[in-house]
Figure 1 (tube, rainbow, N blue to C red):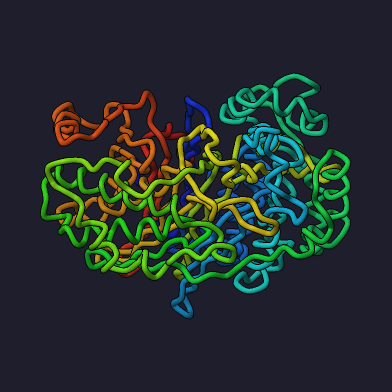
Figure 2 (spheres, rainbow, N blue to C red):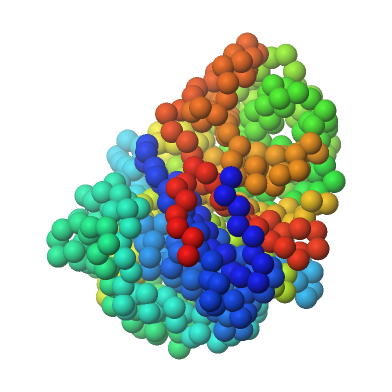
Length: 573
């Protein structure tokens, strides 16, 4: 298991990517900036989705910035080098730990639906969803949140001027970066979509041909946009950038207005805190479903004394707890400002105990016996995650997304900004089919100014073993992957924290009523016993996720970066 320790050096690690296709590959790079260790400090650890982005983060740390400056630099750099995964035209969640005040802050930078939107725009005459409308082009794009998050981080938490934090990304966009196999594959998956939009084709193809590995991709329009933002971050929502984006979206058949951008704001929300097995878990609140699902699952497992059972019983209990947690996700959860989810009830031990009373150690529950949900929603898996710890103990866990590969496929005029397709994360049309079979309800229906439900779950765990910052891409499986890793980390019999990113994964999300299992992860006896209990166990043809974690010991004098072996380790230099 590759483990890198940050000891007066800033270690860089490749965070994995799970793309929204049937086959995915991940590349992981480890770097040690030994010659540039002046500021890195004993506890500096940065894990990002691309080595150039990690280098950008470490650069601002060496220049006197903190973890929040590094988060700005990493976010901006990722928008340049991984346009298929996240960007200025997307959204995300940032979980912060502010060391000097010992407090946790959750920043909600999720996209919002435009004011002129209506569900009918995405339906045909029979009232059925037309998937293409919410997946590509101008109607697919919700109002982005990432630039507002950068402003918020810079204004309230960072130390350096925003120009310093954005400078590495500006240089990357202007001078270009070397195309890697991940970029080439991502383009191949959605080539037809990109070629529908002339501006996107011009940027992401090399004079009409696919870029080859090693060729340099430059984005001068995006560099100019970043330069304007470096002088005035408000320009994205109020200035020339806003005007250009709105004009292009409208001329392309979309429904954005200047008011949509002017009214956008990030939300600081109270993070969800869960007590489990003597540890404190800090994670994402609504509009992420992660925190509420985790809370119910961990409460059920605590009530069943999870660690007192054998491997088979633990897996059975976990599947049954996930079944119930995802059922409530589908029934109740959505944007907290538009829906009235019973948050306190869902997080209570009493409610979890009642939900867990119907669990039998001998047999599986039929999902049809749980409350029925009729609407279906789609959630993309094209996401990125990064984690940062600085030498003062500040922490960031951030999960960002534009939804599908290359989002909507549409670049907003001459800004160089690729727009998301997160309108597809809403529940659209009763009974509509779902490519990822994730169910939703009216709480996640389309409404103007509303944020779609998400599974992105940046998380901290504080325990007697130390502090863990963790996250992963993976669509609806994000929550189950993070929970399984936390269970492994807190296992009293396990003293090796690196196992949290390597363990075999399984998943149940209420409907479809099946246990999804990674290939080659579980022996036949395990599968046989679960099937004997009545579970429909289906071994998938591919693995999923690419978990990345930063772990610091209790004293926070030593931090390690743990990478998922599902990726391919690169060169240390």
